Length: 159
Image (cartoon, rainbow, N blue to C red; front, top):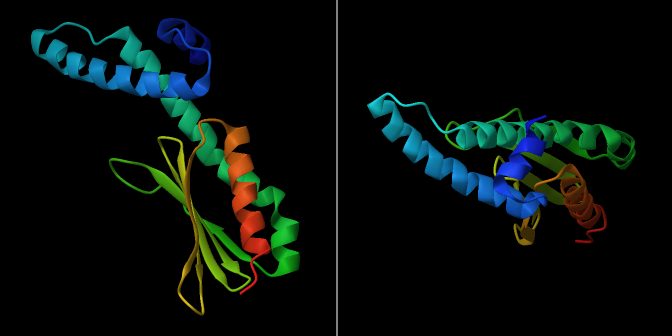
């Protein structure tokens, strides 16, 4: 895949700083690419590699949401939770949402294309916010860990 070559180009092997650095490089190269388009020169190869890698990473994370839901389907069914996941939404910034309704809470996790995960839960009766956190989840295992934490908080909530 492109990640190996991109890690060499960016000089980073760790996804968190690698991810941030690629976004910054992509923005810089896009600006340069627009200038190059005006002069007829080709766009930067680094931009192309960064863009391909970022699309691969985000598609992987967005797809993982379905796997996470499927892995918890028995728990959701047994405990009476209603769980839904949206398709990719948004024009300029893509996101997917997981909604969990049950245990007196209306809960939502939002995964943004940047890898940022926002989790929240609202007590249906009192309308108070009982969970509201934001995490950076550039890899599937981090996303899994934070979604599991969020759901455990929802499942153990006592109104």
